Amino acid sequence: MNLSRLSFVATAVLLLAGCANSTSEPTGSPVASISSSPSSGDNLKTKVSSVTKAFYDEYSNCMINPPAEANDQVGEYCSSHNSQATTVLPANLEAGGVAAAGADPIVCAQNFPISYSVTSSEFDSETGNGVAALTEKFGASDVVITVKLRYESNKMLVDNIVCPKP
Figure 1 (cartoon, rainbow, N blue to C red):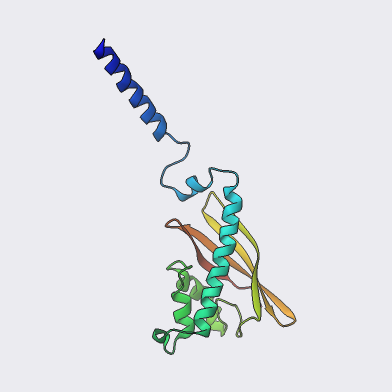
Figure 2: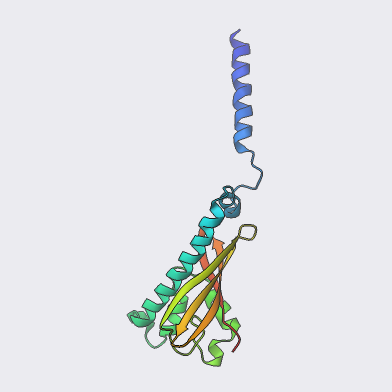
């Protein structure tokens, strides 16, 4: 009787362990874990928006109050030392060509805006990428910038900034 009870318990444990490990999506994928609840899409749109704002706030603060190590390369330093950015952001900005044309590739202009705000945001749960529209105010004119984000290492980070064509 003890042997059959032990067999039953062992079988039950194996079945439960198998059920606990089975998922409809691969484990370890940040997209799988964040797309599991209906409200997570809204949460991630909000995250895209908040990371974009935090990125621009950090960049603006760095440009206004540059650290000593920035020396004579404040713009380059501030764009490559932002906690809200991927490590490839500086290369992506350089590839965009805005800096070569004489504009700041983060604000897409030669001068800083009077103000800025995130006006829309989206998150694609299949790719793990987000996109935000940032509207900058320059007196009477507005400039809308596209900010691309990527979900990487369990964090949403700014990966590229696309300036509008002049």
